[in-house]
Length: 71
Image (cartoon, rainbow, N blue to C red; front, side, top):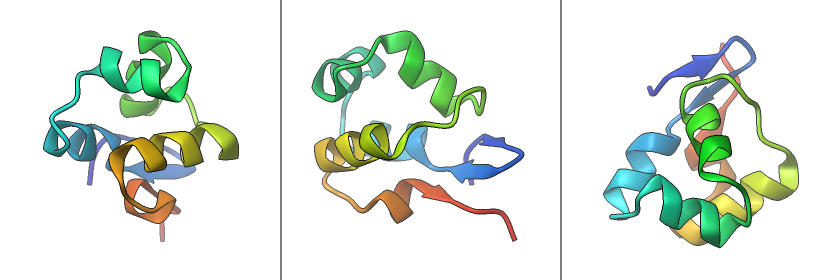
């Protein structure tokens, strides 16, 4: 698993890299700042449902592929 917030595990960085995108490219597609993408990847920020859906759409995956609840 990637870095995680205490309430959310995430694979965003791995999935973004697999898609061949930079943080900047992903942020432009999701209409947020690059700092927001960085904060999500580092487990500092938990994204909203709308932002999660935008990111998943850009990466061609399901939200559940990116983010999971801890056990």
